[in-house]
Image 1 (cartoon, rainbow over the protein chains, first blue to last red):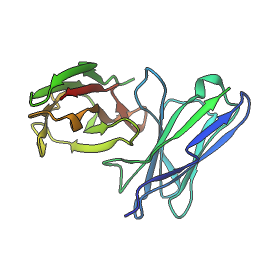
Image 2 (image 1 turned 180 degrees about the vertical axis):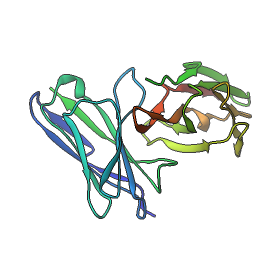
Image 3 (image 1 turned 90 degrees about the horizontal axis):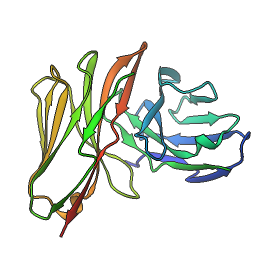
Length: 111
Length: 114
């Protein structure tokens, strides 16, 4: 089975812009979760989508949003980018809400 | 806010040594405890998912135990090898503010010296 894929792998944006990241889960996985990792912080949970519905949400501002399509692919959007949004964004898929299978991540740099 | 603490933050061991590290987590609202290995330039890879108090899981030279009543889990590596060098993350799956969240610790970075 192909693993979780994320595009793009690297991204450079400027403050105030918005960005959309994409994640394709493992075939058959219906749950997709998004995480942010910044230097000095552990992986922080952003949100989880299951069957096109946001099922769980972490403690992030409303500038962070996401959606899931009928084929389980998911996108994450960050609007009005801030310098502090520079991070590695990982998505992970799972069958229900169990063991997470991670993608390679998107490295976002905000200048 | 749930706090997941891992110790030590980092350690260096000689090849062949056995080692262990700790993950502590709030014991309330517990649903599951995950362990992941994250090698540099790779994606985190799942090691174990444990749900029951007293659970013990094993995968090759790596094993883990779980105590949900006191809120801790141990990860053991027997006969460490250079390829075991990685950051080991634990994550606590629990209900917080109406949502189930996977809360990660900051990890234990293991370096195995040949």
